[in-house]
Image (cartoon, rainbow, N blue to C red):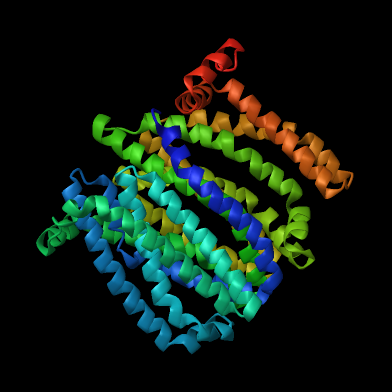
Length: 496
C-alpha cells in the first residue's frame, strides 16, 4: 500500500476543515430553518442527485482508466459537453412540469424553486468531472480546497440568507453558490494542463465516446438506479407522509453522511487511483483491496458504534429539542450507513474490473427491492417502520456487493469477515463504560468525555496491533518531522 495513506492524508487534511466548519454551522442552520424547509431542500437535492449521475453519461469514469493523458483530457471535454446538454434538457422538463412534480411529491412549495435545478446539476456535475481529472494527475490538494470552498460557502450563504428572510430558497441557493465557487477555484488548477487541453478535438472526442460507450450504457443506467435508490427514502417519505418527516430524515442523513462522505470520498478517490495503477501494472487488484478494505472496517466501525449509543442525546443537544426525531432516524440508519462506508471505496472496482453489466444488475435489483420495502413500510403508516426496513435491506444488499467485489478481486473473504467480527467485538467492549453511562443517564458532557477516552483507547489498540497501519503512520511522521526531532523521538522509543 505504498503512498496510499500519504495520498489520503493530503486529500483529507484539507477536507477536515470543511467537515469541522459544516459540523459547527449545521446547528446554526437548524435553528434558522424549520424541518419543513429542510424537507423541501432535501427533495430539491434528491431530484438533482438523480439527474447528476447521468449528466456526463458516466464518461467521467473513463478519465482515470485511459492510458494516455491526451485521451483522458478529450474524455474530460466530452463530459463537459454531455453535462451541459443533459442538465439543460432535464431542466426544461422539470421547469415545464413543476406543478405536476410538486403534486406527486406532496410538496407544493418546491414548484417555486425547480428553476434552479439545471444550474445546480451542471455545477455539481462539473465538480465530479474535475475531481476525476485531478485524481488522475494526483493533485489532491486542489480537490481538498474545492471541498472546503464548497462546504464553507454553502453554509455561510444559507445562514446569511436565512437571517434576512427564512425560506427554502436560502438553503437551495446556498448549495448553488457553494458548487459554483468550488468550480471556479478548481478550474484555476487547469492552468497546468493548457498544453493537453489544446489536444482536444471533436473527432477524438467522438472516437472515445464510441470506445467507452459501455460506460455510458451500463454505468449510467447502473448509476441512475443507484442514485434513485439513495434518494428514494426522501421521495417515499414525502409521498406517504409530509415534508416535515422528510426534513427529519434529511438532517439524520446529513449528520451521519457528512463526515462519512468527506473521509469516504477521499478514500474512494485515492483507492481508485491506486487500484487502476495496480491493475495496469500487475493485471490484478487483490493486494490493494485486501490491505485497504480490512483496515477501512477497523478504522470506521468504532464511530458508528458510539453514534448508535449517543444518537438521541447528540441530536437534541447539537441541533435543538425540535430535532429529537431526527436522532431516532439516524440511529436506525447507522448500520446501513456503516455498510455503505465500508463498500464505497471498493465500489470503483466495478469500473476498474470492467464489470459495468454486473453493477447495473446490482443497482436495478437494489431499486426493485427498496421500492417493495418502502411500499410495505408505507402501509404501516409509521416512518420508523419504513426506515427500519430500509436499513436492514441496505445492510443485506450492500453486504452482497462487498462480497461480490472481494471475490472478483481474489482478495479473499476471510480477512474482511475476521476484521468485521473482531473490531465489532472490540468496539462494543471498549464502549462498555459509555453504554453504562448512557443507561445511568449521566450528563451529556460527561458522556462526551467518556466517548473521547474510549476513542483514544480503541485507536491506540488499532495502532499497536496493526503493523501496516503503524508503519504507514510512522512513515508519514518521519517525512513531516525535522531530523533532529526524529532522533530525539527515537531515543525515547516513540518511533520504533
